[in-house]
View 1 (spheres, rainbow over the protein chains, first blue to last red):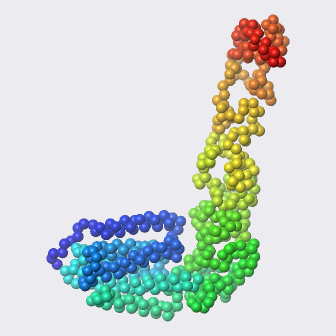
View 2: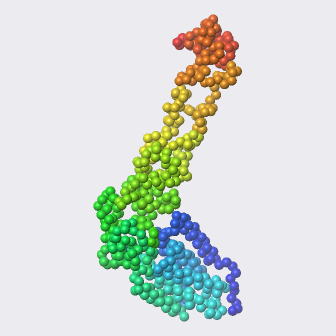
Length: 177
Length: 363
């Protein structure tokens, strides 16, 4: 457990995340001053689509880059920062998309999403607070167990559930109109 | 352990479990898991349509409204197959649905899954049709309570025909004094003047934004006092911006002083004025003198008489001026020689034959 430098400075990716969340919140409150935008409306769907795209980036880009065999562009640290940014802003957009209605498959998707984000935050800023690269951060494998038991598997499940949710929406609102 | 594809074995297992869970849910409860919300429980009619009295009674039977893929039918057709009352309106141009361009596009105006008590009409639905029918919804996006408008707020009855009485009911609820005056002045046929784009309620409209700011006594006037005969918004701009446009009939000067009322008057009130009498009316040191002492009622203010006071009698004045050769009409123009009303200031003017003589030639 030696030689792991503790991060003391505020992570820059969280600054960017906070700015994005603040901007989105401002715009959302402006639109929502006469009522919460419905999930199926223009604003609601826009939030959902944008959130899903960001989450897709979070789910794939870092996983792809961090494979030891690959030496993609840029340091892995930056890819992790991108993962954190998209992995926080994306779910926030999806949360606004839900119009705070949690029922059926959409409710399950939201719940799984919250668990995935929470496990990610815990893993990144609590268990492996000192290293930008998760794979080499832990002095032992135990702190990373949360990754392999919770964060990564649930991310895969979330992807499947979100895809089914989107397919269901398209099926019922477009194909059957 | 991560696989070479970048997906962990745990991820694959979780994804498979999720997919299995979805399939199990679909198998057990159909498409209910995709429902974005509950269906409306209360119907507008007690009569059963399609075997139910409310959408909520359809429970999880998604295909009651959602057409099956590949079945060759549309959801709009499904709506109309149950709602025969609406179907019969389509051939009646005076009925609500018969007057709509997209009457067969049910989802253009209607929605569902908002819960047991949610409205089935989208907020702002039919806006384009309102423009076409002569009444824009531009000024009716939100009620004075802040909620979105519902069709039933303005339309009543089974055919949803427009009900002018509903304008009055709603507007009276938050601007009763104004509406009382407004209805008295204009009548209750609201759409004769209003086409939905105007809203002259305080706070949204300021007369200062026009070319005639309302000040003084004008601020308290009912609109119709100036906008006489206006029957459309465009007519409001035709009101005169000149004082005499409205005040010619009550001009006590009878037009004698021209149309520049502002030279002496302000909009606060006709009196007091900024007019200063050129003749010192207190010359007799008897305090204030009533206007009619010099100016006869109904006559021009440029006409005056000095015989309304004390020793001035025509006979006496005529006798006193006869030796000066002043007589006739010139004798009535006292101020010409007595500009301040003093007797002495006229002395020596008798030799002013030019003035009197020339004026005499005019007669």
